[in-house]
Image (tube, rainbow, N blue to C red; front, side, top):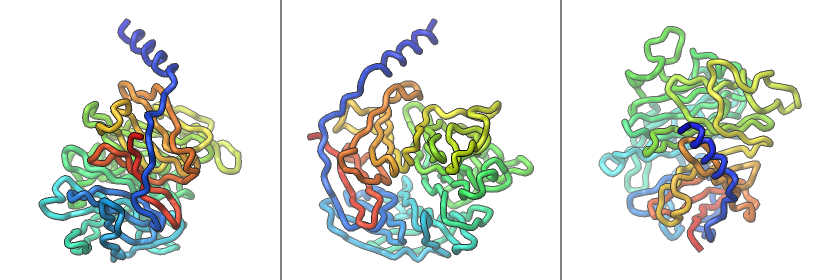
Length: 364
């Protein structure tokens, strides 16, 4: 009976049209060159990456405080490759350590790398490469590259399937199409799901992914959410479980760019089905779980930026399920790369272009 009532509640909620809280969009900074990732500094400034290789610090009122060309080992910039995520671990104020994900190698052989560094006095120092995904691949697409620190201080890093190597997402011996979990020094946690299993890369946390570019942890409900790009349609929102197989390319809602079926299966035994999907594709990029105070009606909602869809998608969540969806910021007509909940409760976004912007969403 309880299950039935829960189902009825979800249907009722889904039938209610979401109303946008009155908001206004403020421009914090402009003239950013394909900004990719945003982090908040303890002093109220912003640290952001540009895919083209620069790490920038922007003041609270938008002034540029620093712009450093990141001297990362083997940094490769091309198409979707370059400098990706910047993450400030929980101990940043004590040791100034940051983590940077980026593409390393060259046009013929490249992969995703993770570097540890120090951000002190607006300079990048003590740069050390602490992880390199295997194997190398050719081309410059589907890297993933998003990071998150979990409550136990471990780091999860998303890794794409390399586009032309999609079958490798099901190969447990490598890192293509996987989400991996590492200690903050790049070593492998002893409790990773496949750490002692023959034929499995010890870093793997989950597999069967295409191109994961959004990942957040819901501390209240202990849920790890990620989203990933499908081909033509079939973009997915998933709840990530340790050791889970998420199906790509064996099971998918999408079709290939040629119009052919990628697979005859939308679901497959032993593989986890997405909790939400988009067809046609919106090309999801960033994601945040809203837990601020400026928009009380948005508490616990997921916000997802869309590149092709040129919108901010608001997903109302109940017990790990999507019960309603709303598209915001369509009036901007901009590709949206990243979204974060700021310490002030505002939503912050990065637009994806050679003249990118840092935007702030606040109540009207």
